[in-house]
Image (cartoon, rainbow, N blue to C red; front, side):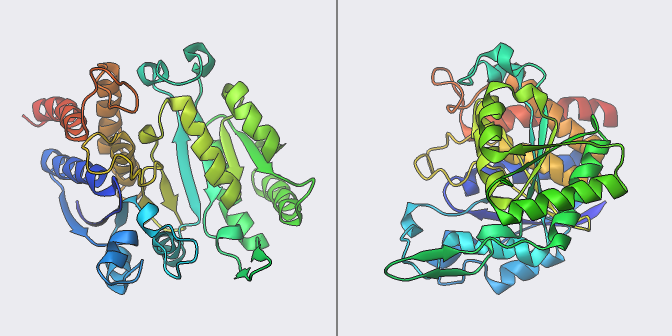
Length: 359
């Protein structure tokens, strides 16, 4: 197939992990006979440093023309002045809103080898397989913001329509799995959470009667996610809670560097990115873990390009690389391998069986 994929390396380790994602896309195209046009564009701090907006018009135009977008990371201490009028994160928020990608899907499934290096006991992580669905274009990240010398306001606002559409997305995922949905809120305190709870209950009752729904308060969820993660399957929550909980969930896998994400809307186009952020302390050292970016490529192939065979092959190649004990420094201090070496190992494990099949 022919497809255009926008690649936005961004800041920090973003360019390093995106380079491995690009190599994987090129390898998949070569072995499976696809024609991928890969177009790079600036975003975030890199765009600011080039004298552009955090989301340049040309970058947005490139993303809108593309079948999918692969993003590295944005932000870092270089641009972290709270008083700054322009910040890298504005570019990412604007891109999500412009593309209409309101459902952020983050799978969390610890790999047995990587789990040995997690802070939690490996036996505590057996059978953990969670999919988080985080609402991505509403809430306090997009609400009205005001600040003066004495106070500040971040408005958290949600509409019924916003909650309905992301709930349907989560329910459709739950239908393909165990049929269980956990909704996380703070309905004992927040009015927005009460709207969420009522709306989620109605959508499930009227449209997805086979889904088993439970509500969990966010503070309780933060505890249970660490103490008994195996009880959860599909987790639905609002923007801020989802951001925090999915970062917490990374500890289940041993490293944030392992986790991918897909930001999806109503069509096939999506925005794909590892969840780890820009990690400026290790940027340029060649030690960043590209697994999250490579697994984000797999999600891109599956959700935006409908290439299930290729997506599964990438996931198996990453799995086999981890199983072989080839780990980056975030997981293994001694005997670790670098970013490019990890990418090489994954590509090698993808290329060999495919080459035999084509022959």
